[in-house]
Length: 253
Ligand code: PGA
Image (cartoon, rainbow, N blue to C red; front, side, top):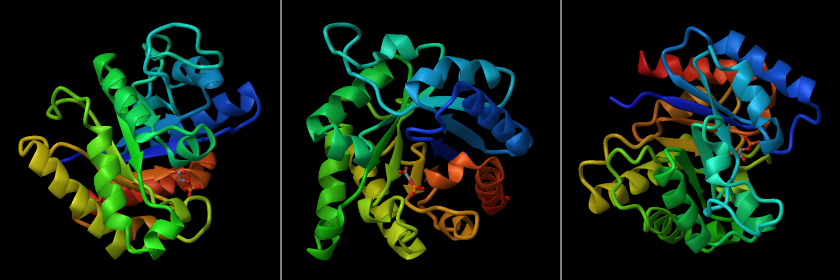
């Protein structure tokens, strides 16, 4: 029912324009025939060139963050108007944004609503930190961050929102969550979405993110409430990213 979605978060990589375009082209060549949705999220400065390189391919482009406002005195920021025509998606509230740029739940809410209002599909990232997990607060954190992220949306149905469950301790550590833990989080997310809008529950893709590799990806995609992945490190290597996308395609066939 839901088309699997595999998104690559390039973070602050690669360092040159030529490498960014080359990576985009290699990804497009490697995932071409797959019956799933694929997205790459390059740094803002490479968005235009990557969007051009991927224009006649099925690979969509996403930004890694955006400001909620359309314009103004916000040094260093990128507005949703600037993303239009370049990015169909935008990751919002990634844990690195929450940690290093001090984004709050309220910021995430405003950005998610602004993205949707500008026709950009938000990939809202939520997930507990290690100390929260150890304190048994995983569900509470997911609940709080998810409800906040969707709180300013006029409606969930056809908003285009994607939810990414990314436990912070699993990001970039090689220590992925177990498929069962990812499924438990996915089921909780689906339950909350259903409570907020029963009609939206079936249409919202829920991704798992955190040390996804070609080796472990298939197990996540077999889980009922995991519809895809948000991939960091492995998305910088086109064959690895494509192998993860193939695993997603396989799980639906
Ligand atoms: P990782 O990053 O795949 O390198 O763990 C995931 C992410 O930050 O989205």
